[in-house]
Length: 98
Image (cartoon, rainbow, N blue to C red):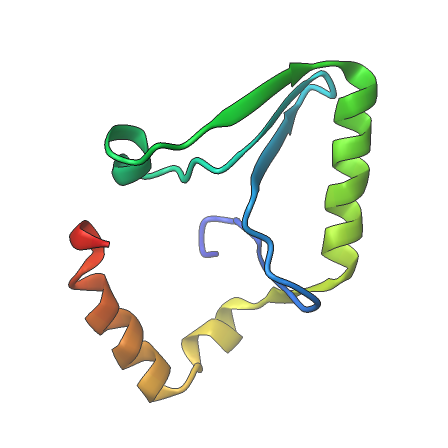
């Protein structure tokens, strides 16, 4: 967040798919995470769709998802409960095995 990224928490459901739209033409929809485990070990799949109409619809869906989300602010993130911070640190120890 210090570098300018925006982090949102979706309020109504769990969104697990990974999507991207580039130049309103190239869309990607799939399950691949952007980490080394997904790249090397997991059986993940993505679909690449080259279509303007599909890309516009994907962008509309993203905007709709944002309307059901709240942006997490940097100062709020720094003030999260101590138990949550400790739990995140502890789980990070096992990152390579998850």
